[in-house]
Image (cartoon, rainbow, N blue to C red; front, top):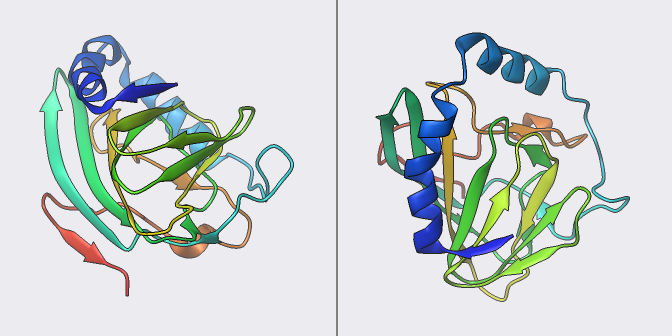
Length: 178
């Protein structure tokens, strides 16, 4: 599902009201499920196009607590011809394209092409990969609402699970992958 950026930012601040009923035990069950998730090598029977890499730059631009939930937004730059490793988001999230192009490959769905000002929903516990088909870099805003200090993703692609954390880990920390 595609949406405009403004609509997603409103969702990021209203979803915590729904998640606030998520108990510590149910959040832990989700995290346990993430840790036990099997490794995969394809989405919908094929390997997504592009080289699986970390983003070139990741900057956490928002990290606040709202109604007992942690709201995090990252500004990421993905180089042309690269893709995120196949991964899952324990509690879901949204990706909005600021500039460039991106294609979300989501298990069980057709690829979703997005351009500047468009957003896509990243459902919880669904294998996916976001691809930059080029020609230039893609600037993305990735938004997540989670229980406090919960992980926002886990790589589940065979052979690249050691790439680690794609997202910055501190407020306004810039991570460059050269």
